[in-house]
Image 1 (cartoon, rainbow, N blue to C red):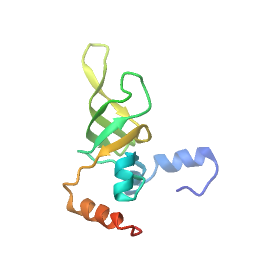
Image 2 (image 1 turned 45 degrees about the horizontal axis):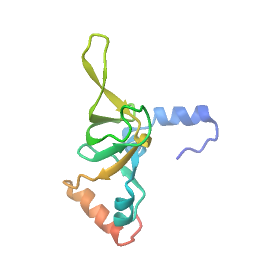
Image 3 (image 1 turned 90 degrees about the vertical axis):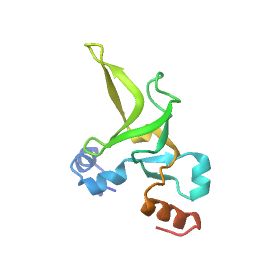
Image 4 (image 1 turned 120 degrees about the vertical axis):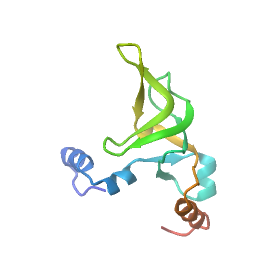
Length: 126
């Protein structure tokens, strides 16, 4: 995505990217069954998708839950039931990087997303 080979410039380009580009950066791999069904490796994560945490803290690993929200500004995913305690004892949602997730079930309530995936099923390029 970036033209430069310098890590400093790549980090800056990622941080300063417009939201329509950041949306594509918040992508996660699909489960192997979905990968073979839709003939695509990864998709942008959306609210309502079911994801599984495959990397990270041992308490959260192998946790499968729905996506509560997607934070495009920080490029993080908020998942239901994954929280960390604050100093005052209350629970705060733990933002997770999309590269640490695998999408296990897609939310196909959006007709555009459904038609796009159906076109990919047949082996078409997009």
